[in-house]
Amino acid sequence: MLKCKVKRLEEGIVDIDQLQKLFFWCLVVNTGIYTFTAIAVLLFRGILCRIHEKIFGFDEETTLKSVHRYLANYKLLITAFNFVPWIAILIIK
Picture (cartoon, rainbow, N blue to C red):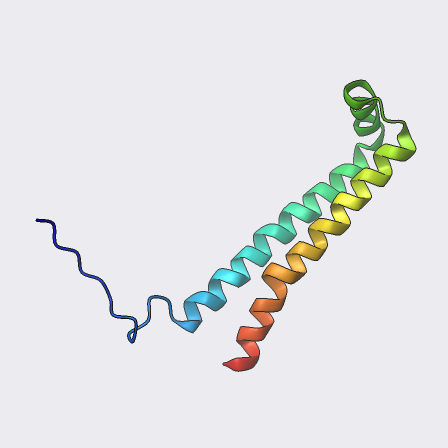
């Protein structure tokens, strides 16, 4: 038989400091991805519009609306799932 050492629930699997570090690094990585994407959209706007026109048949206005909606949704998700939990942990510490 295989024996596993499992921590008891009272000891806790993850302490609050590890959780804080996890949310912080998730925030850093996701903010980096968001920033890279936003800069790429600004720099390569024409290429982006042409690619979307060929693949999906979108005009420039529709493409830019879609990209801005994507960036707005991504920013909201970063805020809700990375920034807010990280701040909450900082407050309760």
